[in-house]
Image (cartoon, rainbow, N blue to C red; front, top):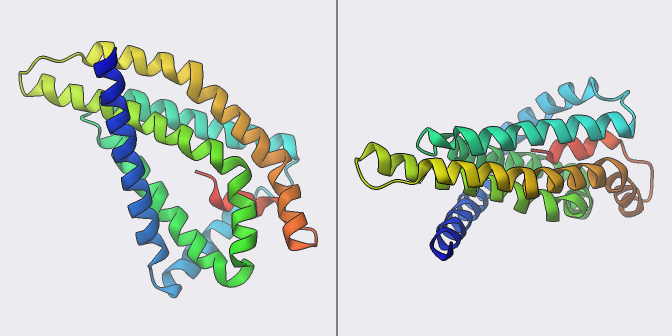
Length: 201
């Protein structure tokens, strides 16, 4: 068990490094690229404008829960899916933060991220770490070495249902019901609830 814990911790640290690196890369893209990305996301958010907070909560939770489950289970394909997941989402988040900074400022961006992000980001990093751990065991099996891929996959699914899914449920509730109010306090005026979706995985 101690060895498994160290292995998972290593995968978590690796996922965090990849996430922060891709986030920084996303924030360094040209203003034209970030503005175009923001425009495309804004068009998508237009379809969510009429949703209630409950509807937004359900969409956020289901979106993250399904993706996180896929990250864990499809980690069996040598860890490529969780690696791409954390790379892509970190980069896109960085692009959107860069684009929003000129329009909203870092205070409002932080208000739209921090309340739920302090739970959501570590939970999604945990899901990624579980998928990477399964992927590492798959690579060992492919190389003909001793592997515990079935054990890791089973442990990953148990951890998903015990910690990841409840954590995402809590994060989605905060994002839909609390984050918009924090944003309004920071902005000093009504803020479109859909803005919080801009920083949602």
